[in-house]
Image 1 (cartoon, rainbow, N blue to C red):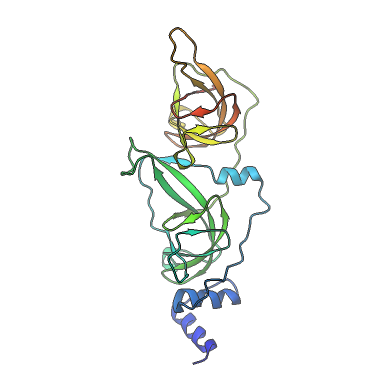
Image 2 (cartoon, helix red, strand yellow; image 1 turned 90 degrees about the vertical axis):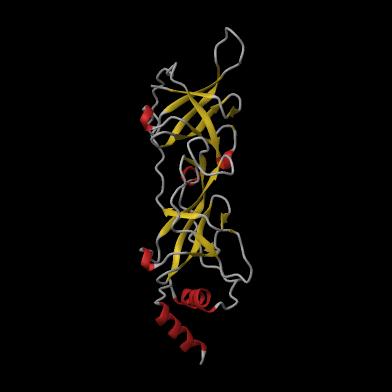
Length: 270
């Protein structure tokens, strides 16, 4: 049997629907035959039209107190060896296809949960949601898909899970500067990969969210307890809420007179 009939037969059997003729050859070879096409790379739609602020915000960390659902995951590539990390332009395999509602052209974030300690995620062991990048579906069959990495916040890794992609909106920040609330302090938690120290433009999480009156664009003042009797809290700088959840928020540092660290206090300007 010549190559062309073989491809036609496999394509009919798998109902593979790749993006373009070259994609048909690569995708059928990768998903069905195991041909040595590891050097091939799909054309990556690099988001050159997006501002650095949007790209930065899309990669900002989140926080969760329970393990996220992960039915759709990055399950590998078609290399002759097991690869665990991937970069923009690489072709990766996803464990879902048309049976899961996946179609060519759809985009997804790739993410992973990084708990503070190596034990189940819980209220006393929260996890940072690390966004490693986002992907575009390149070819599909009924049970698996091929995708190309469009943008990498970091390396995309084996077993990263998928969530539908949507560009974030940069929150409007009021020019008003209300007085910081006293006596209702929240605390600085963690940042990317459970970092505990932050400077200007860094992202970090706090234990205050919409349940506490926080909205996107809300302004915060960050303080530290100098641990000396009869003294005021030390003002370290300011931050703004860029993503708000019911009981936590992601903030970005706007003013830093000293490094913020986990355990510092935050007060909402309101």
